Image (cartoon, rainbow, N blue to C red; front, side, top):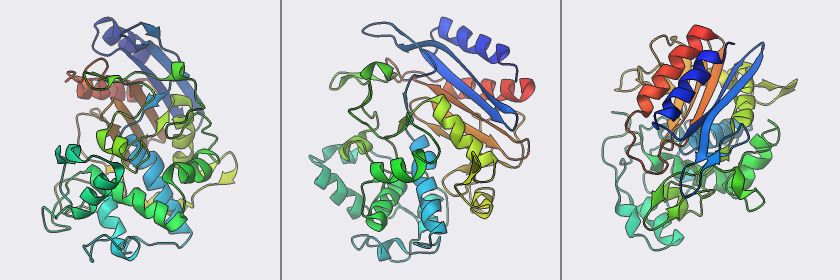
Length: 345
């Protein structure tokens, strides 16, 4: 892998102040390559970046943590894709919605709005989630929404009888040697975190989840809240590319990995597999993507891409919303990095 063009591009967009900084990792069967650029923080003080920087993964939590935990539960026979959510969560009032519907964003649950900000406590927010009404007939369209994965987080906790942060640490991050990954932990050095947004009511957000809904759940939810670095995420990509094997140990069955290569929404408006986007044309994935790949992005400026056909993957972590979210060029950046990756791998 020739990292020089990618490093040069990252340095260029940092110099132009398009993003504060970035970390990148490329993985294939011959090894791993990593580079970084810029700064982990611009205000109030300038802090240089490094490969050890921990980024708020935002919605990458949905695939790295929540979807993976659900796949493990599938293998253990503790649920199926056809399991009704209400059979696990008695407070969930829609009897016919399944685990698959939540994973593929075809549940009918509404999209994003700011009404949740009226909640005054964690308990209020949980009530709010369970009180949501459907906004469309299930399985008639794809509507991406955090609430599907917040509910999946509740499912995981109900089955495992453990908080979601403990579940993913014990059953995902420990076996994959992702020692720097997890939901917010007081044991981590605050200086390692990349800062995200600076707001009037929260100040400089650093080492605390940016996502407001996850924050209502103490930063430990199925939609967001995990922090990680490129080294750890390269282990995750390695496991997926190796059909569920990691360092000679079976983590997931190859048949389970195969589920991620199947599109469950072919007749609908977006191509989605379980948790991930599946071969979906997007400005985030470059011009040369194969017809056998999965990817996901996160609002804070994160993205992960795994190409089964060409047998490689990469992760790009940025804090593009620091110091503010007025940064419309993240799609352009993701597209360029995807193109450079395939051209110089």
